[in-house]
Length: 187
Image (cartoon, rainbow, N blue to C red; front, side, top):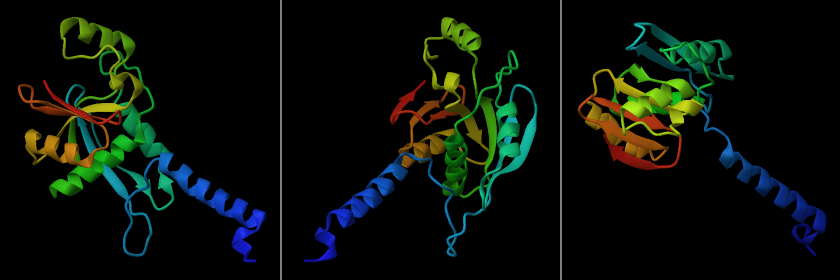
């Protein structure tokens, strides 16, 4: 009789399979080089409302860089009242990946990051295009432009990623990206 049929071997095998399956729900790691070492990821973000610009490496060989993540969170605060909220770091990886796909440096103009409940409610009252339960409220959405890339092209690149919602706002010339369910719209 082989070891594979022994109950403890089956439990070990099942445990290993379950552990591998559980990793599917973790945030995806930064892409790796040929040496299988995570590479440094960086972003430049310019807030269109405050004029602040931040260029920062947010992920390195050991993972996320806490200070950089806090600095990005501050830049992405609700510019109307200064409220901050944790931002889904998957958005940062998505932005960096989109710039890479476009063949440009990851330099983004930020129209909107986090929105407080008060701001979102006010914007919803003014426009049917603002969702009551917007993912901006959860720090899971951004409205952006990528320097050197037309917004219609950026929207197509984001749609191809299949990593969340993508809205293209032609009149205002920006792209909404989020880490929610996969969907698309035009505003």
